Length: 226
Image (cartoon, rainbow, N blue to C red):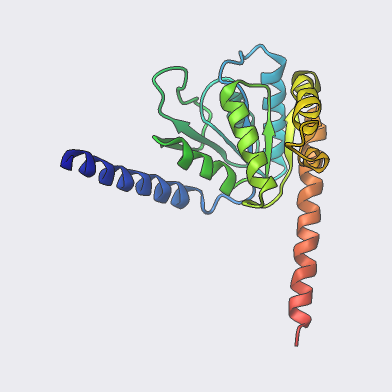
């Protein structure tokens, strides 16, 4: 029992160390966008090529790009960002299979714990772009939806890339979740779906412009307060 308690106590220190390392490494990153998608997407896939194009466009527009640091869509995102002007960031997770760090990272962090890694994804992102993927991608999608829906994090663009890929899921959500009263019609406003890199870049650019205007108005109101 004492050995178990000691092990649990050391786990807390490991978690704390990952949090500190992540915050210290990323705190000066500036505006960033997180890209998600399948680790199994091959380089020849159109999804890979569009993810690379989106990432380069974001990087040239002044956004660092954060990915899970592995192969597939993650590699495409880091690769595109590396070709641009801003930072390419990989938040790698230690797994027994599938995950290995790609070579296109300016900043690279390794995580033992998924929940610490997820915190870093959302803490430093002004938007999410979610490409086709599997269970892990769905996990990130629905967790971010839950956090925004419940007001636990600020609302920001949550962009699904590829109408054809996501259409079945969206139809099911409307026909089942919405019909059963488990979500509201307004919840669909949290999601935007695009098919081209230009559409994704415009949504994020427009959001950041509106955010800056809102912040400017708030500063003016504060300055005028007697």
